[in-house]
Amino acid sequence: MKTIQLSHGGGGEETNDLISDLFYKHFSNEILLKAEDAAILHINETIAFTTDSFTVSPIFFKGGDIGKLAIAGTVNDLAMMGAKPLYLSSSFIIEEGFSFKELERIVITMKNELAKSGAKIVCGDTKVVPKGSLDKIFINTAGIGALKTDGISAHNIQEGDAIIVSRDFGRHGATILAAREGIELDSDLESDCETLWPAVEALINSGIKVNALRDATRGGLAAVLNEWALSSNVCIEVEEEKLPVCDEVQGICEMLGFEAYDFANEGTFILSVSKDDVEKVLDVLKEFDFSSNATYIGSVTNEKPKKVILHSAWGSRRYLELPKGELLPRIC
Image (cartoon, rainbow, N blue to C red):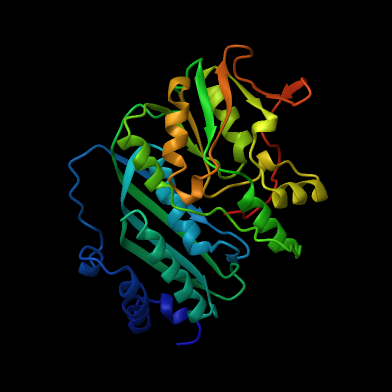
């Protein structure tokens, strides 16, 4: 089998071969292999439930591919609510003629990313559409997780909280932009795409009270902070000189006229915690390679409710606005 044909989505022998030889081979678990119309799940805890679709272009990029993005993105949405990822569904919409070798590469990446959280794909679907109907492959995933702590919400941010970012930001957006525009960089810039549950689990186990968590995906840091300010009716004040941005991302921004805090991320999250817990949070996060440069960037005040204020190194300040328009389509 070299390419995906329409018959692979027809429900017959070819479909069964694709499911057995590829998806069952790499996603094998006792629930999936029952091959029922629906997975039967036994969960005795409060659950979180999420879904997402992935259409990123290009589908392979430095630091990941659409498969890694699909797993990490869904697992991270559960983790940001304090939920341990348990079960995922995965549906593939594939263009006729798509390379089987590339599809298998994507599936293997998904299997490897699942191992980081222990989650399982327990049901799925495959559709094949005529050539030209879509661009190569789209993936939809949904996830269920068991809530391990409560009270994490964009509505629970309080005056006096500290705002922490888990790592330098803007890498995913800059990487996709560079790949799409053919920008050759003599650097190791790659997407931050990563499963974040191990760090979140460590924070929960440490006993730290986290008021809010959010992965800074589309709209980046600017979108998260503005959404939080609105949801909790607070002002968030950020020190610009503390914002961690790598030289490569900053260079792309200066070259093309973008701001790093508007760029999407896929392995960076923002926390709101009591100021008393800042050092403890940083110590926990720095145990993980993907959050080793976690940084305390600002505070929650009542200065200008529902606004985000950016303080410059020169003493001036301005509002950090929500990104406007579509900065970069098909980023995830």
